[in-house]
Image (cartoon, rainbow, N blue to C red; front, side, top):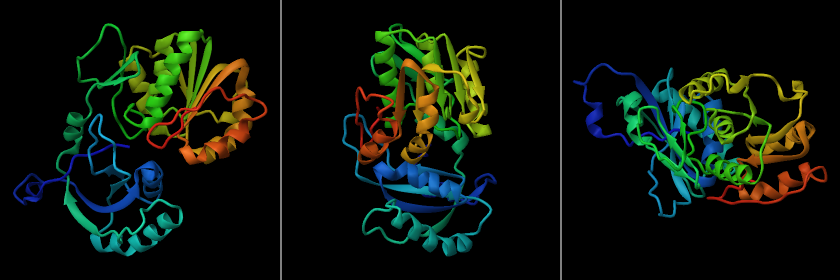
Length: 308
């Protein structure tokens, strides 16, 4: 989920260049539910969502944040008429913070997000081995593996706790053994598939049902000189027949529960499966779906998420 900078009043000056206009609505949501809330809003017409606050390293993040949703193709009054229903559905699903006021719609002018977001995405250290860098950065570290990621609408820049948790789990696993084949389910930006290849997996496959995600993933693979190193596909999970030594699935808990039979079927004997995007309170719901076929070796928690 992209995080756009706060807007200043000066950006609304009519004398500025003709720019795209958006209708914005802000929702007070629990931080742990921000991704679910963003997915809900995008599924109901939002062009994208952004957490208004910025997070500082070493500072405990707030429990409740302002999630801004941006819409096009609707007027301010049209969106205002939809907000009551959206808020009601989000509240019933636990996506709104307690006592949150009804959101209001407002019109804004594009402040040039196409370039502003580039200033927000800076090189990021993850674990002991990874350095995530945007394509416009020349920063490298000799003792780390550089993964070049061009942010787009597809999920996965390494900044979210679930992606970072998987990357740390991968570096531990590859330090212990070698993997001949790996599968990334719901690849998004392709960051995890690319990381597995750079860590030494012989063959890596990655699947996603979103054409935009696959386009972004292939572009990122090319940026990492891995055009032929990772096989990207829109193949349904149930259509895959081969087995993999390592499978990664960074997908929300309900989908992971649904996928359990397919993922266990695709995992090779003595293979490893990493699941993520699970809220800490959902871990006990997901785990039984994978037992007794698989044993659970570890569960890690980070900012309310439980990659394991």
